[in-house]
Amino acid sequence: MADLRWSLLTVTCVVNMASAEMFTSLLNGQQVIRVEEKLVHHLRTYIDQELQRLEDIRRFYTKVSDLHTELYEDAGTSLTNPLVSFTLIKRLHSEWPNIIYSNEALENTQALRSSYEEDKAELPKLEDLQGAAKGLMRLQDVYALQVESLVKGRFQTVTNGKLTDIYIPGVLVPLSGDDCFLVGKVAYEQEDYYHSVQWLEESVHLFRGAGGEWRPENEGTLEDVLDHLAFSHFKTGNVSNALSLSQELLLYDPMNVRVLQNIKKYKKLLVGSSSRWNKVPKRPTSSHLQTRDTYERLCQTQGSQPMHFKNPRLYCDYFTNNNPGLLLLPARREVMSLQPYVVLFHDFITDSEAQHIKTIARPGLNRSVVAAGEKQATADYRISKSAWIKNTAHPTIQRMDQRIAMLTGLNVDHPYAEYLQVVNYGIGGHYEPHFDHATSSSSPVFSLKTGNRMATFMIYLSSVQAGGSTAFIYANFSAPVVENAAIFWWNLHRNGKGDEDTLHAGCPVLIGDKWVANKWIHEQGQEFHHPCSLNPDK
Image (cartoon, rainbow, N blue to C red):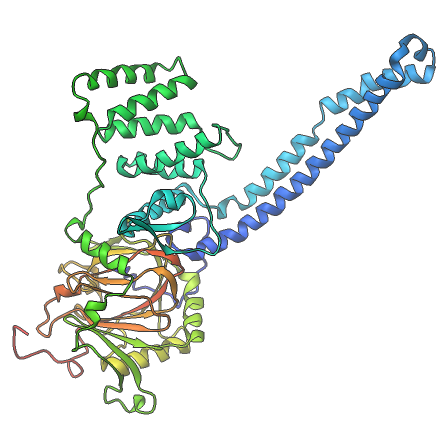
């Protein structure tokens, strides 16, 4: 359920980057790229200063080395020259200490650190790293991506026993052993050993391939990965692998008492019952486990279900809704489903209008929340940022409302409809299966005191290269992201009861920057626009 902070601004607040969550919105990622560009400049300055410092040291070394090669071969004779004696004494008394105890290296390092500290507040936090790692694992699961391919920068799944590219990026960005370790470590710390095993296996492979070489930017080492992977295998029931990895770890740390004790325990467990301790890891359970298979299958189709769309009752047309304002320029309507009734209006907005809406929303974006009883809270099953915009914020918003009213025939004035909610999705950004209408009388949806959410009108403000479809779980179809189009459906039956067939989800964004705008229209105020049915069962 969406964030319902009704005391909204016309969006004049400023993004607080210190608390901004990069993983929940790609907008923050774009801002952080600019911060890293500054850090690259600072590092270049540091390198130049260090190179100059080392060049000065090299020059001093060459000068002294040449003296010992050319002048001091006959020390007794050379020291008879008072100039030689003086420069030797001066060098040993002053120049060598100046080189040895120079603060220049420390000053260069401190300057780099000061520059970093100035930008530190704008950099990703631990929560961002964890959120980004969870996003990768979510994409792995929903789109059945192969971890081995992801590590190479490819987005591949297995189809009929063969690797198939879901998306081919223009530039491959392979992951390092340390990258894989951090993803695996996030899973490990959540006791999600199904994912930790897969990512840590890749990490071990990469670290071994590099000869176990450690780099200063790395957080982990081969020993760290072996330690985490061995325990992950043990927790998934694969004691044989846990034993062999622990024995390898012992080669690097022979006196590690904990590892020695683990090896002893693993050997004891394997005696006479090796088959019992060699299990295949199982995927973690989910809050929507009973619909997970359907949800993921629909996401994987990315809005392409030929059998569904062969239904002769589905059609496309030019739609006026008997509204004079649409007679000269009717809407291009695509009926995607009859139960629930779902339609897609192509070219609902222009590129410039979509850009205006995103620009207005940017300063007010905050982490999206869901209903938690009578309150709202953030949740892992909804990863995005959202902002609420009053219709008085800009003429574009007013035009949107007028257009929605003409197409739906409904009253979209506040409080009979909510303000426009603009949403930007983050890394693997998604919204797991949910209803837009309230399913509890204590829901904050009723805070407007205009009844439940009768209908949803969602506008696609951007395109994506892969993923991001809207999946209708029980209706068994998904609608792809169509830039500048809008999708509309009824949440309630005519009798006011919720339509369970509208259970839907925002599939994770695989590649792209997904922006949508939601307009939720409530029951009250529609008495003459969409009257209740006289049939209580309709």
